Image 1 (cartoon, one colour):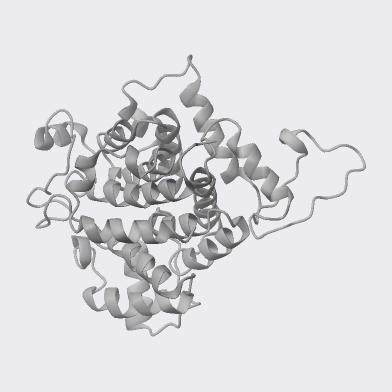
Image 2 (image 1 turned 135 degrees about the horizontal axis):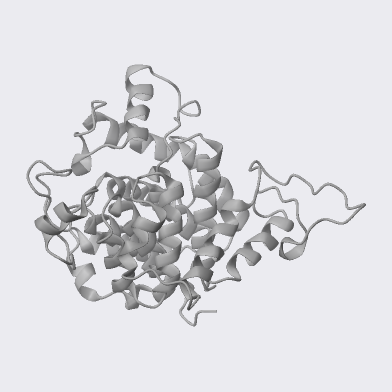
Length: 357
């Protein structure tokens, strides 16, 4: 277990998310790695401005994308309500995000709007669909990027963590597999904020929460994935998700990261091993691998996530959150905090949320 306080780890996770998001602003979505190197050099090591004609054109180094903007809205809602208030967060989306969108990709805060938020705009603005009936089938990490705030806030309350993350995710993404992987990421983050280590044993700890009915995943095996025995009753279906596989993934990635016979060198090539696209099933394995391998080295985890190209913004945001939770706020190099736009306000919100964990 970590010797850092839970507040240090919580604040580190939130600031890691903002840093990872802003780091991806300039080099976002380069699937041609030679083009990425031509535009930004052999190794990206700091915040950069987007090039003309690229995603987020016109924004400055250190500014947030729309993911950072929405995460801020959820943080503000949590702090104002002192709890997760679905109606309050939805009101903020209606009043502070929707008026800036028009249903097209290159529009809105951060200079680009994701598929699931574009669909949300069509439902809420054009079709007047009520909250509670919104959501689409996008399979990216859009919801996972904002529920970071919920995972931190309810790190010590796994049932509440799962309930709030599920409720928040289905506002924009309703595919059951995507929701289960999003909840699982939140559960992993919650464990790291508590002080647990991202290693081969973490999934076993998560499964014990499943067995106690504290996480909403079905399971079919005995302890340590041993087969059921003749006469064993059908395990109770304690939740909405069909299997616990999303909870097992992180320990497999951690095992690979620590296995001396398995090396991804240089580590940025994790994007080639697990995939460069946006889908959550590409992004989470890479984030878990980097966060385990560089569990005590925030800078290395962040920079290898960024330099892998593709959907490197999400990879960096999800990875830096996990490592921020492991190293704490003081473990984040000061230059990454100093380079953030509106850093003082973000720090204040991170520390205020940390105080509520």
